Amino acid sequence: MRAKDIREKAGVDPITMLTAYDAPSASVVDEAGIDMVLVGDSVGNTRLGHDSTLPVTLEETLSRTAAVSRVVDDALVVADMPFLTFGVDEAQSIENCGRMLKEADADAVKLECGEHTVDLTRRLTQLGIPVQAHLGLTPQGENVTGLFRQGTDAEAARHIVDLAERHEEAGAFSLVLEHIPANLGRVITERLDIPTIGIGAGADCDGQVLVVDEVIGLSEGAAPFSKAFGDVRGEMERAVEEYKHAVESGEFPAEEHSHVEPELDDVY
Ligand code: KIV
Ligand code: NA
Image (cartoon, rainbow, N blue to C red; front, side, top):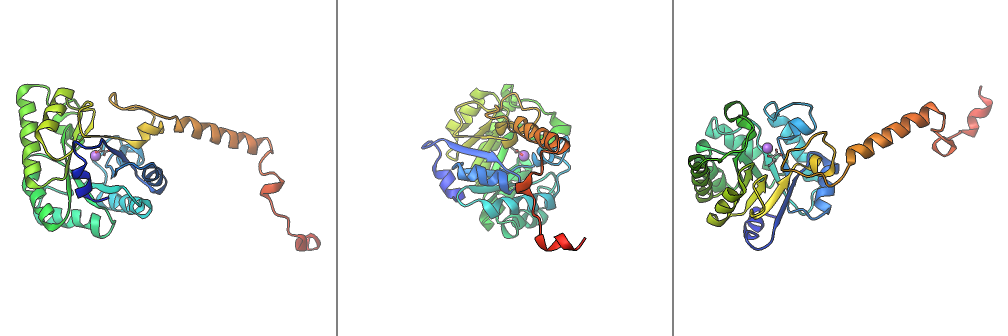
């Protein structure tokens, strides 16, 4: 899958996207036929024990993206650029985004967007680095905006629409819309040619994205706009408790888990 293929699905077929952070989660997502795998900076919360995405480093994302790319055959792999690894300085931004493609085999990068990413989106696209824009709630700005629904009044909504149109014009191949009113998600989807991928942005976006840990029921909590379709954490708890009990009771390891070497029988 290439960015161009995703772009062409807008308004044709619903687009599916999930995060993945390592080889096993990525292979499950890819084998299910999900269109895009996002190596989200949500890895900070879901897998690295942080309570925000801000501490995630470029090296962590390179490593995670490389692991995901090694096992994904069909889906588009999108590397989510960590806080302050882009948008500070143009040359540095291009180098960091380029490393995701050159070293970690990503197919595209995602940028949390604002006024400061319009020109950068144009430059990256010109250079051959497909950009997925991200507007609405952009969690890297939590210390400025809080972690609340965005675009809830007319002025704020107009600002998001304006930025969406400018990023499309600059060459973004798709747009993630996070935690905005459903009617704003619909308006943006109608106004843009590129696909909108919603997370807490209503049912009218061209596609949907969620955090895989929330979908499979691995994380302890989930966003109000998310949904657990499984209970992986419950299954992990069950297996670990069963293992503990089996060791403590002497049931494990059983004969079939052990090897006796006859040659050693006479040695001791
Ligand atoms: O990091 C992430 O998981 C994301 C999605 C929620 C869009 O950015
Ligand atoms: Na993110």
